[in-house]
Length: 405
Ligand code: PLP
Image 1 (spheres, helix red, strand yellow):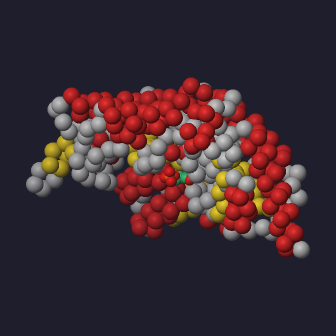
Image 2: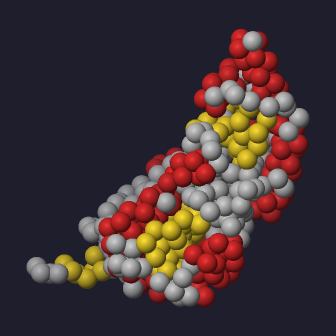
Image 3: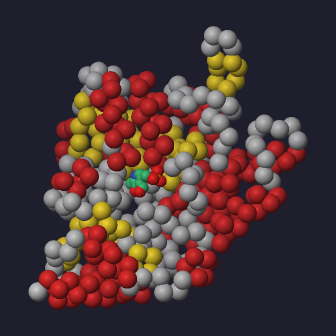
């Protein structure tokens, strides 16, 4: 089941636009835009700070949103959901706060070859800073984590395995439970970058067993500037905060300070209430579709896209062959047309795709590409969008070769 295009004001206003860049950011349904406006029109104040009723309304809106988002992601303990600007800030929080406290010289940090820079560089830099080993698990030829290699890499001195739920560049869905099992077998923690998982798959945080799961609201129909990380309570409680200021404080003495309870301890300063409220409206909208339907729709579209793209001469597809093994992300190159030229040609036909290294340079080097073109699908896309992409690619191919020849 797809979502009606009419629910998305930007798409409704531009009927011929073929938006295939939801892995970068999703379009917003009217209910999200309305929820933000309604918050500002009825409940805006600085939460936590005022004794007056309006501040109470803002506080309720903020924490009500937290409860809804935690429930959506399968976490019973909403106070272990820390709001951040998104996945990037969440992974930096983990690497900076948890990492500097727990990873030391001689320890090992393991990531995978398919990580987005946001889940690669924070761990690389942590390892550099403390003198730990930074190890990268390679991929199989069809773009999956080499699980045999991962089992060998996760040695007794490994403190953390940081991995993505879904690759933004290949679409590969990783086996979170198996990776958690490998990490926990030797007492390491498993941190999951869910930027591309939470928008597309039902996340059962409590059942997954992962120690922390990060997400970005703007990729799941919510506004930009809001996202978060859900983590095990014991892990958050034993971790020293990394930002200091208003709200996260219990007492400030002249020589030292004590910290507020969760979630406040990790949310210094005035929070993004409008973002949380907007994201709560987004997860209500996704719940209305049902995440099983979101997934089924994407598998169907991806299967169709993979089959149609494969009929174009010179098409090189990256990532797993089976639609079931990937989310709605299809990465490709077309003969010798530079990905940036190709995406510019598609734009002439109103087809929006991403071209570049997708913030995954270590992965691009491994697949011997400087860049790829990426089409990514979401609830509002249909088979007609895939047809428009394929037709546009055929035109681009013909035009390019007419000029080149
Ligand atoms: N991780 C993955 C897999 C992503 O796809 C992205 C965004 O593209 C990020 C992390 C970073 O997310 P954000 O820019 O919302 O912080």
